[in-house]
Image 1 (cartoon, rainbow, N blue to C red):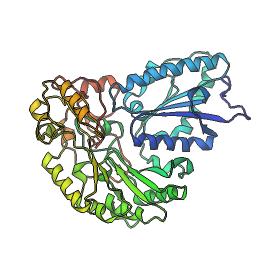
Image 2 (image 1 turned 180 degrees about the horizontal axis):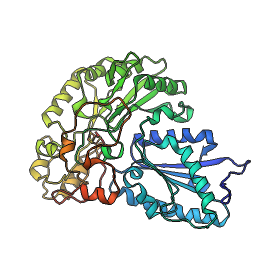
Image 3 (image 1 turned 30 degrees about the vertical axis):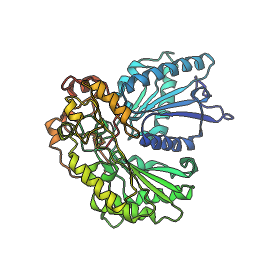
Image 4 (image 1 turned 90 degrees about the horizontal axis):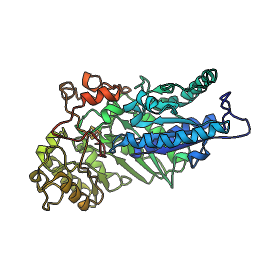
Length: 439
Ligand code: SF4
């Protein structure tokens, strides 16, 4: 336990961290890496907040009412913190991930028990943030009060890549022979329903040499299966040692050469970025599993256009045909959004859309979508981000340098209140968000 007066740890007691992960595999990877960053400080993983000195909520902003769920969890943690303080100890509370990025200072304003708010691109700085919390608690003990907004914030999109500051992977990053490996983050596609470009920043690919080094480290730590992760993973375009740029197919071929690696997967992909080489790799690389998650989101060209998806249903169908030519046993899963603002029964009943049955409301279509679904995510409501002209005019040029925040006026990170004014609702859409897998 931490001494609340001195902020120091008793020598004979190990420190423990409990990390609660919400959302996708990218967050699972980030949580593992946070644990890696904290391990040199003496933090071992705890199975519950009650046994922890530090609790990290690694949040996801895709699901409906994501931030409200976080605040409700924070209320429970505040009670635990108060209980600790009555016993003369303390509990440090950190909010990480996409809600931290989107809500920023509002989190400590609404829940002053929060000590740290850290965005998904800055969690490698957790040790420094914890030290700042101890310094702040030293200052606080002179007036004994905790003021709203007194937490430590880091929601920057730092110029340096967090990956350059993370420790080498260890056995703790491998579960049952399987490990995640993040190779790409952020997105420049600005689908109108998605928060990723705002919370994770512009598209960024890790250098190929760094990815290969981490892949070898994970295999050495016991992984026989690697899942390559990215919000738009098949947009990968990492710089190689010779200065050339590798796409995802080239990277997969190189990773497949690591001795002891049996299976490779990747997720999540965008139909626009399935290039010829990647399709060919599905037929040529034995370690690449015959499975692909390829979100289509809608079977209606009109709705795909409204979503700013940059592909049509015929493009998607041709893609699937080509994949099946090189890999006939390929298993496919997808995501569909049902009840997108403006969607009619005719859009939904389009032959390429989820199976048609009678219904006249978006909610009814959503219910039918859920019944039809097996591996797909279907949603009935989502916050719609209107395409502002600076966004729609963004260059498609890809960056191999560390990402930056969206730079146009409409897309700059901003406090939630002003952001909501900017992210206008369209066609009667609810302002709440629902899960829609990136890409
Ligand atoms: S849905 Fe995928 S492709 Fe579209 S903006 Fe989100 S991450 Fe990018």
